[in-house]
Length: 78
Length: 78
Image (cartoon, rainbow over all chains, first blue to last red; front, top):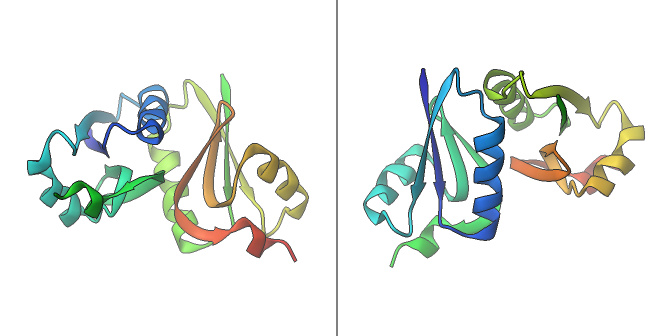
C-alpha cells in the first residue's frame, strides 16, 4: 500500500479533483490522504519540498501531478 | 464500467502521467483509453469539445483534468 497525498485549499477546482480521486483512485494500491493547506499551514513546507507549486496537486510515489489549477502555493503562504 | 480517456502527445510529461494512471486508476471502475493526439489528429475535435486545452489531460465522467503541462492543444493542430 502506497501513500497518495492530495494537497488542496478547499477551492471548487480542488473539490472537483478530490471527488475524482476518491472515485477513481485504486484503493487497493493507494491510501489517500487529503491535506487542506489553508487549514494546515504546517504542511506547506513539505508540499513545497515534494515539488508542489499549485493546488490541487497529487503526490504519488514521489511524483507530483498538478491537476487543473486552483491556486498557487505562494498564495497560501501568508 | 466508465470510460476514462487520456489525451496526450507522447511528451515526457505525458508519459509520466500515463504511467501514473496505468498504476493508480481503479480498473474495476474505469476502462482507460489512451489517445495520442499527435498520431490521431482526427480525435482533436472531440478532445476540444470535451474541454481539453492542453495535454496530458484525462477526461473522466465528462470532467476534464489537466495533469501537469506538456503542450497546448492548439500546438497540436497543424
